[in-house]
Length: 217
Image 1 (spheres, helix red, strand yellow):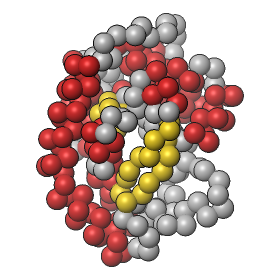
Image 2 (cartoon, rainbow, N blue to C red; image 1 turned 45 degrees about the vertical axis):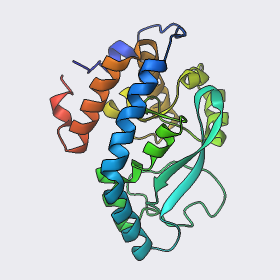
Image 3 (cartoon, rainbow, N blue to C red; image 1 turned 60 degrees about the horizontal axis):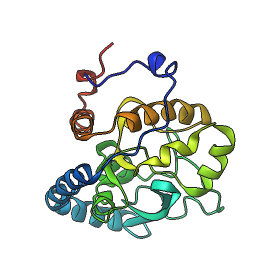
């Protein structure tokens, strides 16, 4: 129902998304985020305590990301890496088997518990539950030089989850980003409450290990 083959996406010419009223959609996202934040608060507190007891550094990780229109905002996550993960000052993506990720961090990433504080970003109006993955301004500056039309994904608020995120693995190379951009533009052109609800359902299935339910061949 929500699966779109990559080969089909990569051959579709996607027009610039039309401006449309987003108030109802934002209210939907805000209401769901508020409910989830209350339900997830005990889990977040417990995870933060475990992180604080098992590694040095703050339990909450803050980082500048680019929001709608490229406006910077501070994103919040539960820390999953060593506090000196970027001690050389160079922004870099996480990779498979990344040695910077702590033992507890691997569990938090696998269960996506580390993403829960972003519900506050949704309540603050900086993010949506569903949308393109928020990226760092420093990395965007590089990607826009290498990928034509990359800035078009900034037409909507970034999301905690998204159409690209439920189908594709985390970014590790420019080619990964190029492929994800196609999914992001597909989503932006069709964004709406029904589509968003479907992506949220698929996200829940993915979290509990039932990705095959919506990933039809």
